[in-house]
Length: 372
Length: 199
Image (cartoon, rainbow over all chains, first blue to last red; front, side, top):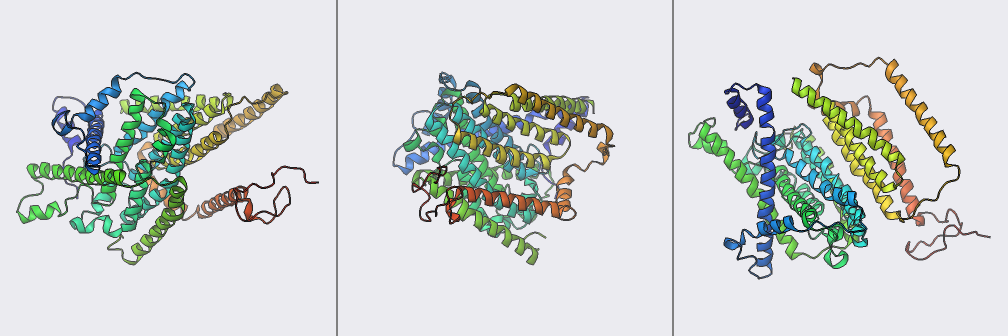
């Protein structure tokens, strides 16, 4: 199954053609995918912010941004520039060091998690063996940053928001990890590449969503809760807590929170599409189409074509989920804190545990369908 | 390979410095909040050391368990009870410090002695298992390390039950400290204060 573009290999061979050693070529290669992913994440945020504004406007029968560029597409850039040039305020009685470190600790793990998001067979920053487990581990760092900024702001609303955020993200991490575990059980691997390849057998029919419908729903609810999106946006509930842990933040530090939450949303959508919706797979397997049209699958132009289809499919699936998340945000009311914790501990946790057990049983009973 | 080895060496030095200075900060800083956050930094650097040793699964588990669970709970508890007041000065603080320093130095010398006398069986970089280690850990946990693994889970269960009993006083018919019958209806209802002298 080793097909697809290997850009790193070609790039290194290209540089070696100029007489560079393979070490130097590797060092020149290293920052490129990281930079690309960073740019992709930021552009993704801009698109999501624009979508959020437009879709919320449509949901409330408004027009939304209109004058900044065609259909207001430049509005997010204007927002970003405004935040960039705003004065950076640290409140007089706040704790300066923790106040600055908080937003960084929230943003960095989210961006690091992009390490494992594949857009094709070889189109990811690093195919680390622990794959999806890395994301679970990294996302558990975030509450520390939230608690830190909540505490350092020296404001009761901030502290309450930080505490709520930490409680929420601890509670929903467990069902999230359990539903990922059911997928890993079927794949026999933690690597995101293997998870997608295991779903690529029969196109749309072999996607994990049909074999893990409960896991899919649990994962999506938990991902929304981890991103603090409505109906789970209690940490920043405007009517109760002003803006939660973000209350005292302005300028670039606020922008870091803003970026972090939107990058996290896109990352969660990407991971749902990788874990349950076949990742870069086209609904009909590309190999079948190539065979039908009598095209050689290993020809360079076919490879470039399949790779671009893969990227388009991944992004399309992810943005479909982002669209659902935005629609949910503008149509559902917020849950109360006790309802939130009840849902997490008394409903999602037992259900995901049962899902894991049933998956293990089905794997033993029908190894050909549930991964032998 | 010289660039890779140099990078590894620099990473090792930086991580070790962060672990040592951070751990000293945890112990010596006056502010309990700073100590708790520094503890998180120390745990992260230890995870980085595991990564340098090619144990990526252990590193991720370290981050998940120690940073994501233990440290978050510590900070959570501190923030729930933090009263922003200075701790009371202790009278014989000097002698206590001397005693604790002595104990720590004794433990350190014990560790150094173990380190120097033990013949460490190091595997060479060629036959290190790398990514295979996840599978190997799983095999060990379900074969020869099964009993310690299960006993650890019993320990966690005991801690959990203890916490529930402490938090919910209505599970017992009598209050532990006052000996009065406990109201089974509502926990939030005002009851007799816990630490009153019952004559």
